[in-house]
Image (cartoon, rainbow, N blue to C red):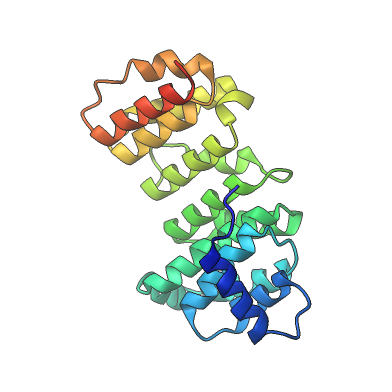
Length: 229
């Protein structure tokens, strides 16, 4: 678990001063996300909201996120705004760490209905931090070469964090192993890491050490060393 840095704590203190009417750190951070005029401060507040695993405010966050991505014009503007994208990314990670039925419902809504692959990818990646409410049936369809690369990578990331290769060994291998030959080195590297969660896949991974891409080779070495293969 990543702990807040000294800079994070200094920022949190400044937020508590700014929103002193709020009794808790989480309440003050939520106010910063909803009302601060500085996008970067909103992003930093979202990071801390996730690190502290705050579980309140999902209704306000739901409305805020849906306003952010809710229509074509706004979403198009968001994709031209790097700070806005970074804010959305951290917001969805904080939502994933809430691990509530309502927080999962927001991520599911974005995954199943957003017309933008990057928004779907962010929501998919955020499910990596769920525990009680994680639903692999929601993630699994994106483990397909027909999906957008960002969606595939995010689905693999979630599968790795959730140790899907161990908990759904046969089905996970059926879905993920074909991605080891995907044209994108990013996809192949993340497929290696996701499959490495099960010892049954280590021989498959070991046989790929002649991959032409150095990133994939490093991923293979890391995966095998991590599991003492």
